[in-house]
Image 1 (cartoon, one colour):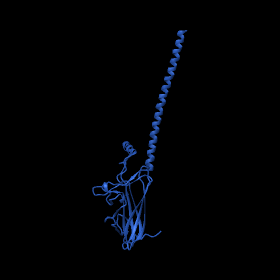
Image 2 (image 1 turned 90 degrees about the vertical axis):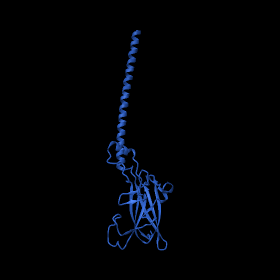
Image 3 (image 1 turned 90 degrees about the horizontal axis):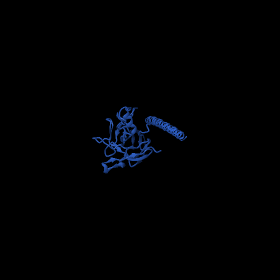
Length: 245
């Protein structure tokens, strides 16, 4: 009876251990399957997020610019006050470009050369040459005259107040997402019709992790970030004296 009892005890213990081993094996299989499912879900979610990010371009910079004018008669000429509004409409920080090339330009694509990352250029319409109907192109020439109104240059540095003389006249200006800046530019101009060109050149955006993944996986066509791709420009027309609202 004792021997029989001992054998029964060993048999029960064997079955318990077998069940425990089967349970542990099943648990390991479950964990492996769970890890595989989580990994696949993460990959799918990453691909979906990447596609959405690139499709909606939420990682790209976006600026909204506006220009308004007022004028005051100062005895023949007019004090024209430009209000420049810059709004960061994107979801990434935008910084004004400060790096210059060997010739001192922050932007140079051949036809257009700019010394300042945020510049205002003004041209006066020559009424004698503008009598006939025509489409005016800023780069092709027209019935106008460039106004040298700032240190005998044709560009006005809109970000002059953000120029750091202790850092070699470096422009230190940036906008966080959702920020709006209003900048004032006073100019003396004679009575006439004018056009103005407002331009903003942002610093190159650094490569983010999605760009790196895109490049490493070989699914990008060319560089992920093009130099000087963050460039905004808009042309406005105005009269001096500025009509009262």
